[in-house]
Length: 307
Image (cartoon, rainbow, N blue to C red):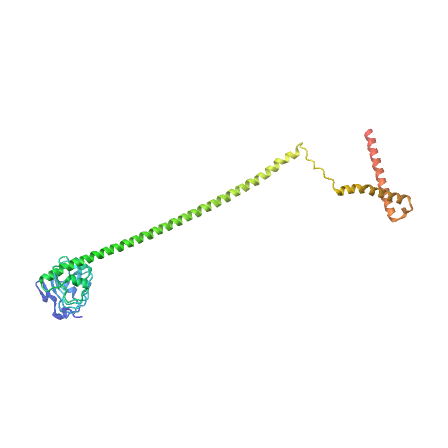
């Protein structure tokens, strides 16, 4: 890139009082560092060069009062161009500018402006008007500043509106989050209460079961003395005569009669030699002897008692 130092020697050599002329220097880049070292150069002419952009640090040259950037290839100005607050005269003739940065509204000391021969936005072009003489260029500066202030105010209102929308959205998100957290807390509280109630019921059920177990032995001990006391046990209710018992009563005499008849037959008749009758007679003799012994034993007991 071609700089003023390589084209025309030291910049101090080009300084005439407070005016520095770097026009027709075939510049592709502004020597900002060298210009910053010359705060006395309040008037700077950079016209008729090949500048397509201005570096952001160019806006640090706040000592500039008059600036000529006409007949270059500038597509736009730096966003912080409004930092050049001491600027009073600005020539932007014959560039490729479409819009101006919003910070342009901060150039409160600007008195003269030329924007002719730029492909300006129709609204901005109408505001700027022509700059064919000193009066029109002054009017252009005043009208453009007013317009840029309005644009800045609109943008600020839009920014504030967006901030308000964002704040409202943030408030809604926070409210929604708080509601969600409150709902979760309420749910946890309800679950905790239900768990506590369940455990309480289990505890009451265990205590009731324990009391029931403790009552059972007491009832048994209380009932035991009653049975030992003089209280008469209840007699079982008389059994009702059944049909089978009636039949048995009818058959019993017949059975005894048959037994007696068989016994007589085995002891008197010729059947006494039969094996069956032998067994019957043996049983009969044993029974008789047992009865006799029983009678003798009773007689002995009676005699002893009398003595």
